[in-house]
Length: 102
Image (cartoon, rainbow, N blue to C red; front, side, top):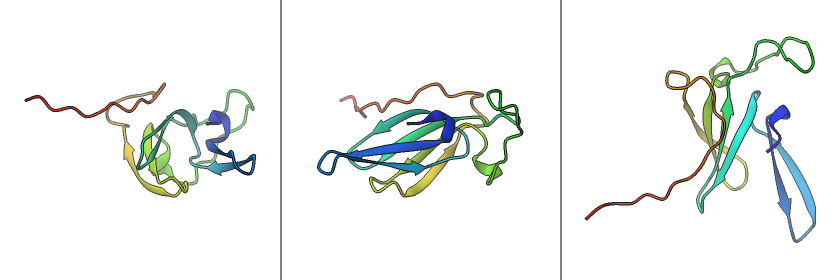
């Protein structure tokens, strides 16, 4: 994950080439992979960039808050989960195995 650009990178071991996939306007804070999907967590987009000193332009305001984005393994976005009402920041993302008690 490349936090600053909101991108994910995929490395192809057979061709030894890397591909960059823009995912969001914000900062990618964590990536988790399952057999069925890729999940990327993002934190809230600042209205002003601290590093560049410029205003951040947001293409889609619904994707400006903290999110978990679900992608397929071809990096196509399936859906997103808005965390704005629950948290202010996301720092990492983990996939936990589902368990049931008997």
